[in-house]
Amino acid sequence: MRIAIVGTGYVGLVTGTCFSEMGTDVYCVDIDQNKIEKLKNGIIPIFEPGLDEMVERNYKAGRLHFTTDLGSILNDVDIVFSAVGTPPDEDGSADLKYVLDVARTVGQNLNKYMVIVTKSTVPVGTANLIKKTIREELDKRGLSDLKFDVASNPEFLKEGAAITDFMQPDRVVVGVESEEARRFMEKLYKPFTLNNYRIIYTDIPSAEMIKYAANAMLATRISFMNDIANLCEIVGADVGMVRKGIGADARIGSKFLYAGCGYGGSCFPKDVKALMNTAKKLGYNMQILEAVEAVNEFQKNILFEKLMKYYNGDITGKTIALWGLAFKPKTDDMREAPSLVLIDRIIKAGGKIRAYDPVAMEEAKRHLGDSITYAKDIYDATLDADAILMVTEWNEFRLPTWEVIKKTVNKPVVFDGRNIYNKQEMNELGFDYFGIGIK
Ligand SMILES: NC(=O)c1ccc[n+]([C@@H]2O[C@H](COP(=O)([O-])OP(=O)(O)OC[C@H]3O[C@@H](n4cnc5c(N)ncnc54)[C@H](O)[C@@H]3O)[C@@H](O)[C@H]2O)c1
Image (cartoon, rainbow, N blue to C red; front, side):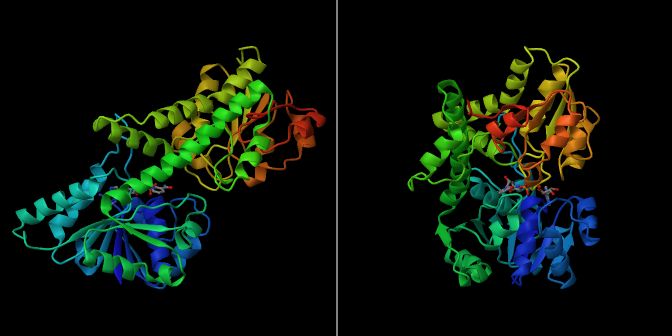
């Protein structure tokens, strides 16, 4: 089978590479010439564990191709996936510009039956828009009778564990509206069915909705726990113990119950907003999601508020060591990272930042320029620091040699945005310690 994946970002590159790993012939297409050239030269434009070897293996085997020209390969493939970005528009709705650009290119070049599958996260109704756009282009070319199908196959991979998530999925959701499209999708996903992974076939609007509902649910769990954590601090409870206590209930489960300094990334913030926006346009108010967003905004500021309280409202001239810049560990993705909010507030309040992240430093420079100092490692970040702020829970931050750090800091105080250290241990080491939801 031969497929094209349009959009070679976090989702498109992983998806294309993983399908090629299963023996499919894959064309990865992107309008970014520079990105495609890099890939042809073996340079992977994103950090994703395990991806570089897999790309190299399949590229060398001739199953993975990179191109900027969708039109030239379109009629050589059986399925086209669209995995382009759907960033938030000014009003919070998903911007479908890139998705519809792809649909137009398909309509301008299509000469045979094909299934056009949306992998990007798109609002309910987008498949119909794609169909209409392709049909208009075919009509212009006098090809009104040419048959094609659209389908929805939302992606659930997590950055940092994307390959495992794709190769060993909890489930694959496929929204189709014709038997023929279903047969094509069944064929493509056969290697996954052979391995007993669950493929759920739905109608298209339900598939589109499943992706938003899943992300909104996960964001809700995080904000719920953050709300509980903040109350824990007031009443004198420990959110870590509360998490274990409620997570042991099989009806609740233990995942996504960690309190912290807010969620970020390229998906949760924009998808929560887009879902609320879809509802609002149709006259419905998603009250729970409004609260989820409000709690998250509050939480992204919480380390700053704790820091200000510690220094009686004045951090002018203070040096703040910041550990972790990426929105979560094992990725270089800085989109909507809580660290950005924190850095902005600290700088505006007159503080100086010395930051370190194991892989997101280059990406951070694109966002922050020279407004902060980039340290060599966590120890370098803490030189003369008046506080340490732990923002992203990279494994290598879990067990630092505090005795060394104690000698280099100006003031031994740690604000732990992910609750990875133990308050009593930190106090015994001579550090003041503040977590989230810990008295
Ligand atoms: N990043 C994630 O963890 C994740 C997980 C699940 C779903 N998603 C969804 O998947 C979609 C893609 O996300 P991403 O993070 O991979 O985005 P990304 O920004 O990393 O990549 C998008 C790519 O599309 C390319 N592109 C734009 N217009 C194009 C066109 N007309 N033709 C060819 N290429 C074009 C861009 O150059 C870019 O390389 C989004 O809808 C996102 O919500 C993302």
